[in-house]
Image (tube, rainbow, N blue to C red; front, side, top):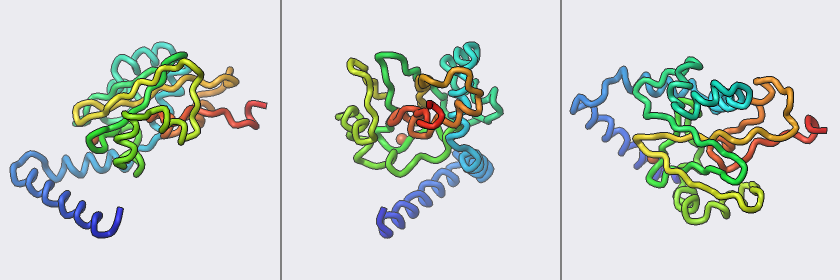
Length: 199
Ligand code: FE
């Protein structure tokens, strides 16, 4: 973002926050609490949720049924956050998450969205040409895999539960979590087993 565009964005944000405060729709405490939660969050939380789902069928069921409840179970406060849906990849079906309108993202469990996620190019192309986007990320899906693009909104946030990679039998939750990147949780990438570990 250019410096003038950034200044304009910040000014707009300040006007919005001032208006919300003036109407009593949001308090300083609520704003501070939300920002603190996002500051604390990182994709490591989402990765841990995924690794646990690969190991524990009961946890997996809870995660797929109610992502926010699962996050709370892991000690993440979801108070005031939109519901969290978890999209299960399986053979023949891959999910890709986008916010076509702006930058809605499951911040409570992934932290701040990366710049590319907010870009106009990603927001438009993820819908129009998801396979093209995946190819640019170097992500190739097995032939015949259907790609489902899911729109995150102000009312509902989404995260992907990728498939557990082959060659990880007997791995611990920590080892598995280390394979799950932010990009895999959005669906632009797949968890990869390092060549070293696979050999
Ligand atoms: Fe948005």
